[in-house]
Image (tube, one colour):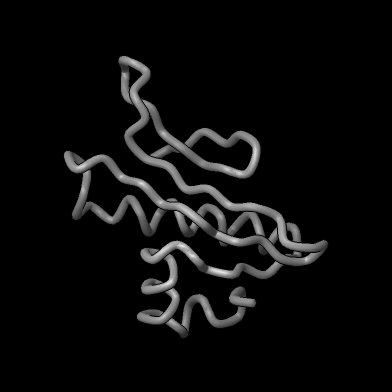
Amino acid sequence: MDFEKSDNRFYKNDEQGKLIAEVTYVPSGNDKVILDHTFVDPSLRGQGIAEELVNRVVKEMQLENKKIIPLCPYAKTLFERKPDIYASIQA
C-alpha cells in the first residue's frame, strides 16, 4: 500500500477522503522519535497494513539516523515480537 507523508505521520485516505490508515511519531531530542499512534480501519485489519506503517517510520528514521521509542501498544508489541528486525532501531 502506498502511504502519504506529512509532518510526523504516514497515512492513507480512501477515495472519499476518509482516513483508513495512519501512524504518527513525535521528535524526542535530536536523535529519537516516539512512535505514539497506529490506526488501521477495521475493514483493512489482518492484512499487515499496521506493520507496513511502522516499517515506513523505521525506514525514514534509518535515513535520518534516529532511534525509535515505541510507545504505541501495537508498535511496542511488534518490536518485542520481532527483535531481530527492530532491535537496531529501537532506542
